[in-house]
Image 1: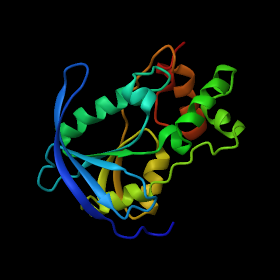
Image 2: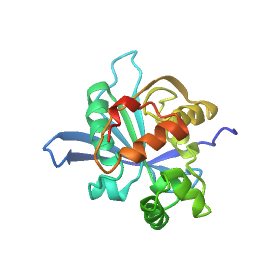
Image 3: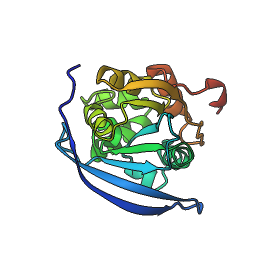
Length: 209
C-alpha cells in the first residue's frame, strides 16, 4: 500500500463533552488540510500520554443511528462512549471517521438493514446491494496520526483489518486492545457475523440468544 502524503493541521479547539449517562470529558478537536479522501474526519485528543508511553487510539467510523440515536442494531454508540473514557484515562486520540455503514453511506446502510431483516447478515446484505462488504480505507487515518506525531500506537479495536491497514500505511501498532462486548437483543446476529466473517476479537461465548 503506498504511503500517504503529508497532511497539515487546520484548526484546534477545546470541546467539553457530556454523555447521556453523565460522564464528562474534555476533548481537543483537531481538523486537517489535505486528507487523501477529502472527507471531514476529526481527531479528538483526550487525556495525557505519560512520558515514554504509547497513545491509545480508536478509529471510530461514523454511525448516525448508533452514535446519535442510540440504535441497538449495532454496538457503535456504546463503543464510542467506552472509547472516550478509556482514552481519557490512558491519553491518546479518537479519530472520528466519516465512513457511515463501513463506507457505503447512510441510505445504503438503511437499505442493508432491510435485507438483514429478511435473513442476510451484515456483510451479505452489503454485497446484495452491489457494494463492498467493508469499503473503509484508513489512509486518511494514517495521515492524521502521522501529523499528530502518533506513529506508534496502541489500537483500541476488535477489528484486525484496522491494525493491518495502519501497519501497511506506516503506523506501528504496538498492540491491539479489544473493546468490551456491548450486547443487546437486537445486535447478537450482527456481532456474531463480525466474529465469523472478519475475525473480530469478540468472545462468541458471550453472544447468547
